Image 1 (cartoon, rainbow, N blue to C red):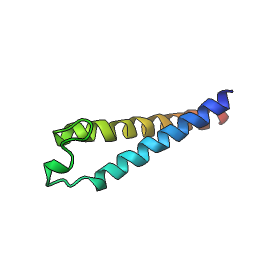
Image 2: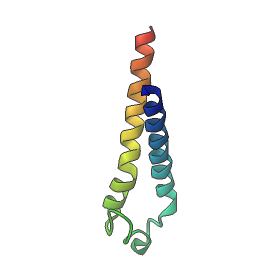
Image 3: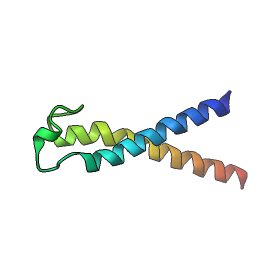
Image 4: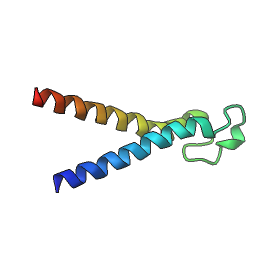
Amino acid sequence: MRKVLLVIAFVFGAYFIVRGIAELFVIDWSDSASYAKDWGGPSLAGVLLVHCGPAIVSAALMVWWFRRRSRARG
């Protein structure tokens, strides 16, 4: 059961990471109308926080998990 939950967590984490990276290329940085109605809008900082924040947290947790696992195995 633990392995199933771990796989699900990594799938969601990978989704957040891909979504956060894609958001950087999808929005038009110079046109605030392109992101004004997105979650976190109308400010660019809010949109990036809402879309890229979970990506940063997911990536950090994945790195932490892999490092912890590699240290435990020695």
